[in-house]
Image (cartoon, rainbow, N blue to C red; front, side):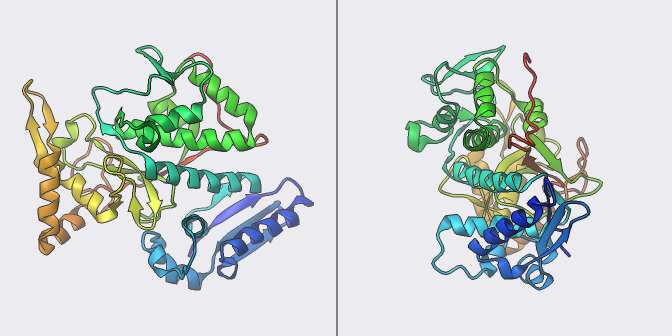
Amino acid sequence: MPIGFLIQHASIEHQPHDHQQMMEQFELAGLVTMVEFDIAESTLTTQYRLKKIDFDRLTPDFDTIYMFEKLDQPLLNSQKILQREIIIALLASPMELIFPSLDEWMSAVRMRHFLVEAARQTSMNFRTESADRPTDYWDYSEETGFILKKNKSLIDALQMATQPSLSGYVYAFSCYRATEYIILLAIAQELKLTHPKKYQALEDRWQKKAISSRLFHDVFLQELGSLEKPLPITWYVPGDRVWFRNPDDVSSDVTGYEGSWIIYLGGGMFANFWQSHRPYTLEHKCTEVFHWRDGLQKNISGQLEINEEIVESRVDQTFADSTQRKNIFSRMFRLRDAQGVYESGGCMDATREWIKWVRPQTCNLDWPVDT
């Protein structure tokens, strides 16, 4: 059974008003008949979850990948379809998701819209040894990384760096850095709407030094699940940043091919930052990661690299052979091994990464001043 999500209320007076607003959100999404709730006045909380009959029908075993095929969505626009998928996936959560206020829930849902919209439009030139950005918006040094130029909008700069439809150019990124930019863009867009003072602080920070890699994770994200307590491997909420691990111990030593970071778009599809018009299915992504090992070769400098043309050819061959296709997906569609272990694990991760809180009363985005 799903556990769903919990809304915390500021006071007993706020609780019925918050609940009414939440039910209005369910009504707007056409989901009000699918929701059950528990109002706890003693703890100033309300819990919402998917009714069992709808859980069994739409997300059996917490599988949200194929939910869109089971929903009756005639004549709905893409934004409303996405809204329904986000809310249903939250209602079907296998663990209790606690939101410190209704406002934070609203922001979390809206940021997922921002994430999906940006991920759909993001295209990059995959590079691990070099990178570039639009010079009208970004400066670079080894010490600071790519920083925002004075009097430039962080939102505009991130969009110009990642969306060729705006810039007319495809810039060089690793997939990990691309997901950072997409996440940062969603945060910046939401802060500008609901917490302008924090948005200005974020923009000021990016004029001095970029926040990236582990520090980015620690500052902006919270992680759900663990290898000891893994999340169901097909429970995804649109806007999730997803890790597909390379379970091959040799090809995973090639920089950038340790695994693949992408964004779940909803509708059973994952963002393809190299060919944005061809998003991945789950099976296609698993198969591509499997065949990285077949593209392993040495370049003229004697260093290992992955030949993407070979990988693409092997993927096509696999999809033309039903037996091989089934065997490879079976090998990959399982929980990954622990870090440093290459045994029987697949490419599926145990965790999900979500954006922290952004509203003025509950914001927990804190970054170091001078690092």
